[in-house]
Image (cartoon, rainbow, N blue to C red):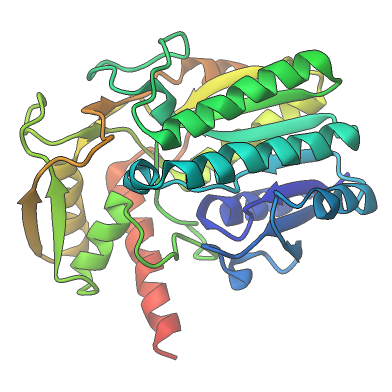
Amino acid sequence: MPVLVTGGAGYIGSHMVWELIDHGEDVVVLDRLSTGFDWAVAPEAGLVVGDIGEYELVAKLLRDHKIDSVIHFAGSIVVPESVSDPLAYYENNTGKTRTLLQAVIDARVPHFIFSSTAAVYGNQGSEPISEEAVTMPESPYGRSKLMTEWMLADASRAHDFSYTALRYFNVAGADPKGRTGQSTAGTTHLIKVACETALGKREAIGVFGSDYETPDGTCLRDYIHVSDLVQAHRLALDRLRRGGANLVANCGYGRGYSVLEVIDAVKRVSGNDFTVRMSDRRPGDPVAIVARGDLARRELEWEPKLNSLDGIVRDALAWEQSLMRRNHR
């Protein structure tokens, strides 16, 4: 039966659509195209342009397409922006997801997979974080995602559906087949920004904070290839369809790289030097976020295949070059 992918025209969502289609699924995409692109949606998928906060639209879509499962990516994701405009994040990430969940429950859709985030953990130090760690998000973005996890847990107890929430770390890279990638202008993702700078699309890259308690003074992050991530979502769907219980699990590799290490990797892989400008810390940025991913590997039988920083950078650079060709046509 068809799968609904919300936010399926965006970065991670468009990779999810291709992953599902590659494995024989029928897919419907719901996206308002605020940061996504219709051309990023696999042609085999049906695209409905609309907002997850429109109950009647979502209810009709679920009913007409006889949707079996929902994989939910739609939402806002920029931490500093959430600090400056918190109510927009609570509306878009929490309030509208509540409306989506109501439609899912009313339509008796049995399976729901949620795109959560490691930002729910806040600042935990440099050791890998397990799912048992206390959640203490430091930004409205992280809080908005944690609130959705709470809604899922409460709603699942009261209604007949099962869910998986995958808390993922820093997503990067692009489809190795070159079909989609991170295409949104003005993105703040480090590897995307560094690749744009290496290719001359930006004059310099900023590093926010060099006085953290880390080996080189810059933040540590666990970077996960987007294709490995969407594979984990597909395996989570398979598990739910087999009767698997509710699950909250990390998706990461368990290896942290500093901001300066990532910049050095981009310089090395691209063969280009570029200007790096040091500046003050940003509000809401934890010192380190590194995953313990044992639970996902065990429960989902997930085996990441693309867990090389240079490989992630190589795919991201290739996509950035393809965007440059597209934009110059």
